[in-house]
Image (cartoon, rainbow, N blue to C red; front, side, top):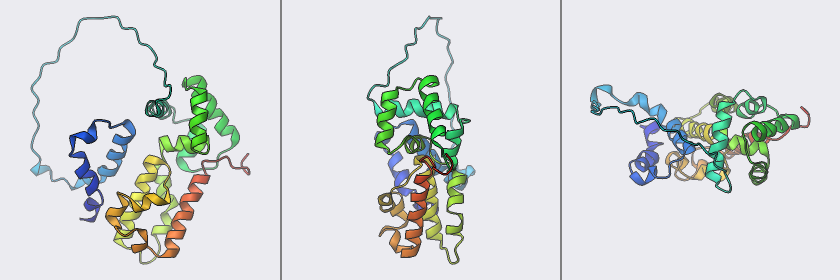
Length: 234
């Protein structure tokens, strides 16, 4: 079944206990998004019931002192801090624009930065450093929160609606949508790696025409640009 084969590499990977040792929140969310489409294929009648046998206990009351940890230079902890704060404040205008690919203004990003620092307690210097590495605050934040699936699907709607679009092409584009939903960005080089190589082992050129590949890459580049301030909207 093509939809299962497309995720075969991931299904094999998660069977290894070592895969779970350093599994981050982002990594587990990626796993959830990639595999949720396969759940409906499971035959309930063939599932073994799982029984638990334990007794809950309440420990004695203790006073605890909670110390707010500094993010420092730990990139993973820093991204986790941002992800937790942003998912709890998804009503921020700039964040909604980043998630849906709508035009941003400098004022949007300035307000987002202010909220992150003043309300979220994010270290300003670390934020500036990471934003610089990502070529802008908007691109950095989108790499953490990803893109709304509906926005990614809309961006590629007329691409997949072209006459003669094949099942393999659709499976490939579905992977593009999943990647954008989690990562918010997709480099051209990723199209030659897992999980894309499971659908097109010889690369996208094996299933798409040159014109189609050019069109797809232009759409991905345009999506990246929506994370930058739009002079027209300023």
